[in-house]
Amino acid sequence: MFTKLFNRQAARPAGSPVTPPVTAAAAAIDAAAADLAAKRQLSLRMRPRRNRADAWTRRLVAENRLSTDDLILPIFSVDGENRREPIASMPGVERLSLDLLVAHVGEAVELGIPAVALFPVTPIDLKTPDGAEAANPDNLMCRTIRTLKSQFPELGLVGDVALDPYTSHGHDGLVREDGVILNDETVEVLVAQALAQADAGIDILAPSDMMDGRIGAIRDALDARDHQLVRICSYAAKYASAFYGPFRDALNTGGLLKGDKRTYQMDPANTDEALREVALDLQEGADMVMVKPGMPYLDIVSRVKQTFAVPTFVYQVSGEYAMLKAAAANSWLDNDKIVMETLLAFKRAGADAILTYSAIEAAKLLRQMRG
Image 1 (cartoon, helix red, strand yellow):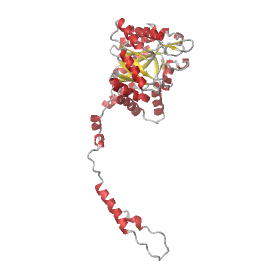
Image 2 (cartoon, rainbow, N blue to C red; image 1 turned 135 degrees about the horizontal axis):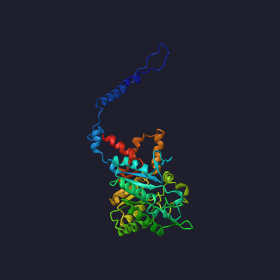
Image 3 (spheres, helix red, strand yellow; image 1 turned 30 degrees about the horizontal axis):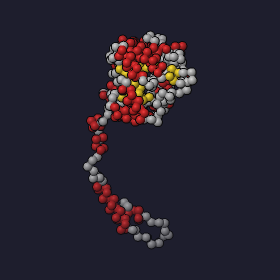
């Protein structure tokens, strides 16, 4: 084959002598090529691709697996009846009145999802600077808890503990006149909020406010009220992230927020600080810890799990969900594949449970995969 390269003749006048080929070099190249073609196979004892050759082998050697047991579905409840309000920035997610929410949660239960996380949309006229509605035993959150617990007694209910759904300024805590977020005074309100939810029947309280000392204060108050079995999942490493925008749309709080939350939510630059926050919350009585957001913070999930070996949850937040849905809607990504890949990434990083708005579609995909 290579001899032909050396036998090409340049254009020449008719009758001129033919230039002889470089026969020795061409023959050597042809011989080497023939020898390589004959051998073809490398002398390899270890071939990692062997374990990837068949679907059954890949299943046997998979290091991490995603299951429906890993999923927690966040849901948004609104007052009224027969209310279904699509959230434009979160395609496929809706605010639902309690009568419609029951059917939605029933689908999650039928699919085997073990828990839902509750986020009430507080009417604007009930939002006040002190967030007093948070501690109302008959507020939307407590009514949602009672409704779902009566319908699905075996379903785990996770209750958000923070003031931002209830404050007229959109912050997670009380705000002093000069704009300072008050820590200790906020914790007092959070304790009252937590007790109201516990009395209503919540299973897991999830303080997402990032105030110092709130885990210990809530734990002490729960135990004093004979709620020893109510668990606390602390948002121990919650970052001041730009990925929360659609969530604030869902709660109608985005336009209310004055300033930002960087004085209490964590700096995205920090990882060691996350470990200190987790350590403090565990010392104060947290049963589980949360990292939020998810995909941009897989390193934090991994460090927390490796350092403390405690139940570690992660929140695939609204901005992550919206980003993936937008790409899928434009056919830039395959929706089903990217849903499963991102959720598996959380498991690979060490997460024990994942809060995701894709919980129902992921559970359906997992069921299809099982056949």
